[in-house]
Image 1 (cartoon, one colour):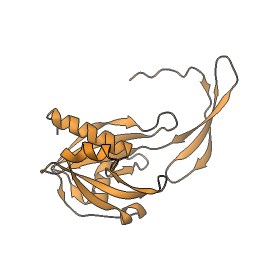
Image 2 (cartoon, rainbow, N blue to C red):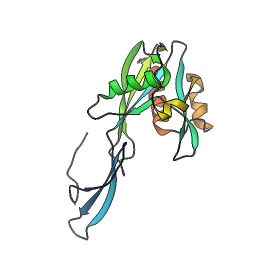
Image 3 (cartoon, rainbow, N blue to C red):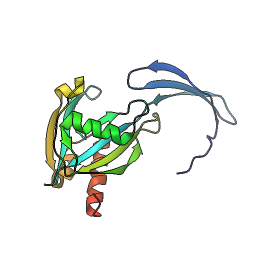
Image 4 (spheres, one colour):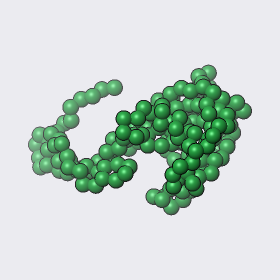
Length: 186
């Protein structure tokens, strides 16, 4: 990873909106030649998502209502990080809360920047294999209306192509998990 200085001066920013989930911060960018401009970014603690696969090569997904899209989506179990929370701990928590599954094996697939043009959010992706039922602890608004759905890994590509799966983190996670399986990982 290459970290280089910005090609312009950037101020410390001013918070213009704080929510339970993120902060919107306004920055002034001053190029070496030219007038300053403002940009707003979403400051986010990050999130963790889990590709949960059982011994029969089925992936467990959750169907939940997403207000911005005004539709139900089929997604990986996912949650935002609490302040200072380890992504693996968050992923295990979300897997239990949203699906009631307990993994037999656990590994990290990687992480990605969700929308680097306007957000600081990174999502850590984990693979939970050999999943089996455990206690379900549904605790929030989203969990109270969620349903759990199981899909054969062989059907994932078709579900993405036909629009049953439209969520980017789910597409990335399922693609990475499928590639890892093809490489004999997990």
